[in-house]
Image (cartoon, rainbow, N blue to C red; front, side):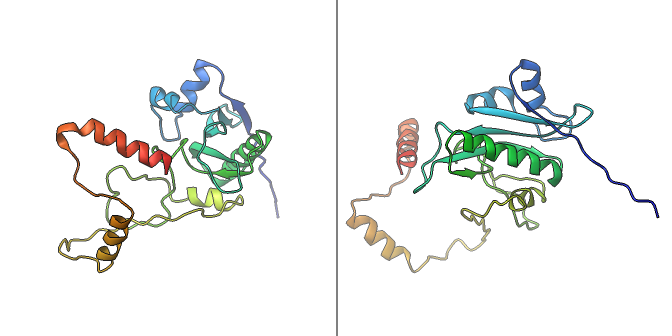
Length: 208
């Protein structure tokens, strides 16, 4: 019987040059990112993982300065995530957690591209229905990349398709009364002053 073992040598690289930035955003075997949009996300660090042929096999960005709050923790974020398989994902995620801990973060959250206004969360169950507008998509093995490395579910989100638009939830009246008692007024968007309404929605969302 012949036994053999394959050892994969992976090289972590912090993104510092224009060529590295291009490799980060447009790797041959991973989903591409728009370089200008990605730069505007103002991550605190970007990392590449290269194999022995200097091919990008995983990448991510890290945030630790401006991150969402979480009770009793200082969160760090892992975003712009992509990895070709679980083996390389393990090294990338372990590296990310070490880097975030060095910045005094007590919790690593991912994937999240800086905040929930951008791409975040992973699809863990699918149906024959295509993704809704602006919903994420990802390879089916990516959730296992995180759970295999000690990550647990922080929150869940479910999308549902219905063709019955006449149904009214019996709880709505109670919710409406509670909102009214707290001074909350719900109205339609003012299409004549849409920008102002969108700024109000953004301000409420970021302060919530």
